[in-house]
Image (cartoon, helix red, strand yellow):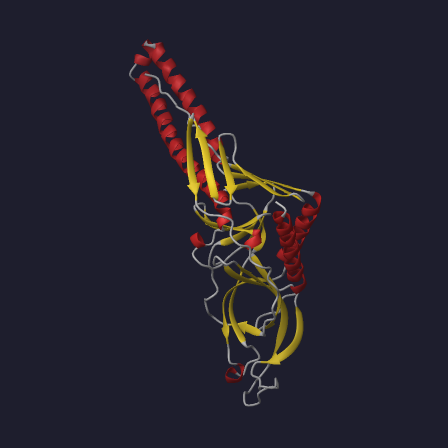
Length: 376
């Protein structure tokens, strides 16, 4: 009996976002699948092979938090500690982003199912090829030509099924199609330009810990001690999302990495463990940090003054310590990200001007997005 391949029809939702003065228009879904947003929550409607299903996704639009304003930081230097990190990733997703997250999870479940299908088809292909070889070895294939023809048909169908399944697996991601009006696009392009400059900073650190230090007792110029580890930022894409815009990527040393898309921020650990935060709920504090640098001073940083390894309360060198030496105090940029749902991450950049530029560009873009959303 010839091998048969029943092709599964899968639904991969798409997300379409339109930014204009009339508001943010959001639709999720392709033919046969859609997500509808309302104040009572999000409902996922799918139609597959004539069967329909409706699943309620709990959640509603959460209250927007006010814009954050920069606050000054005292001078600090590095020490080992670990106390700046975000809450469990499953707690961080914004309620009004649950629909997009569900769409991504649907696509990932589809991908996992198709990968199992692919393995089964590959095994069937190996069996068919082995069967054909045996038919010649055992002679009956030479006598009964119809047997070999049926096996060849099976092989052709299995090869085509493998090709089609691989193609669907490659496209098992939510398609984020974002369209801006001209004023909004200019703001977003400015944000991307500022981020590009930020990514060229000579040194970028993830601040994973910070605590107060008694300057008098420690005979130090620094009142805050931090633990910092070098990290990376840049433009990057995720396999679970296909978008006409690359994400603004911040590597997170002690947690999920951050991916900034035009209307949300995605915290990503792996394809099934991630959180999505609406831009309107994402708080960014941009400040200057005066850092007592015991390592080499980055080439794009400014030394604002000099201090001593051991100092008196008035800043003069403590003469009780032999071989007391001077240390530069450097101006760095600081970015602190937070949300009411538990995100808490901090970064330090050697280029203060680029950090400030990015912080201002983000706040301007966020204000515009809020104004657009309020007109929706």
